[in-house]
Image (cartoon, rainbow, N blue to C red; front, side, top):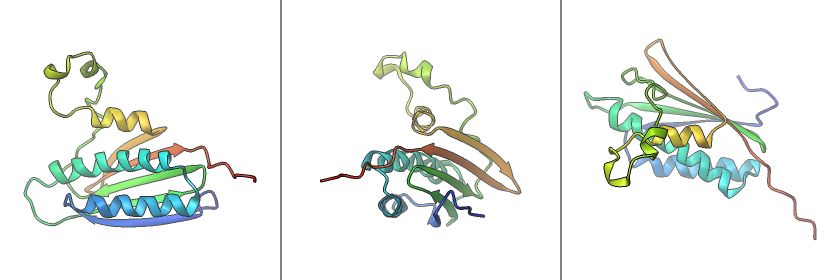
Amino acid sequence: MNDRQYPIDREIKLLNRMDELERLNERLEEIGADVGWTARAVLDLSLACEELVVNIVNYGFPSGGEHSIAVIIQASPSSVEVKIEDGGIPFNPLDNSDASALLDLELDDRPIGGLGIFFVKRLMDDIHYEYTGGINRFRMRKQFQPMESHNE
């Protein structure tokens, strides 16, 4: 349910394929343009969403097949709430996501992966995960600085 706080309320339905990332980023850019986010705000949100969707595509459906991923965006000029929902295997990306120890390792000694959720935590103000009714639900929120009006 939407309230006045979020004048934009859109759902983006994706399939569990990597080529859907381009469509996701296009929609996020459209939403950002509609509400007046800075280019940096759009980029931060795109990176966070992309990290989560890539994890779902790569690991959420080990048996294969075509599955949907819902990305629900509630947006205003100064804030956004994103919900990403999928019916994949239960996976809480916030568990075991203390990647700060990985940053202390030399680049060659770091394992592949493990930093994505660390960056999502840095980019977003609030993140939450739950698995209910056979659905993974990841919610993240961010407050933005709206673009300044340029007086001439």
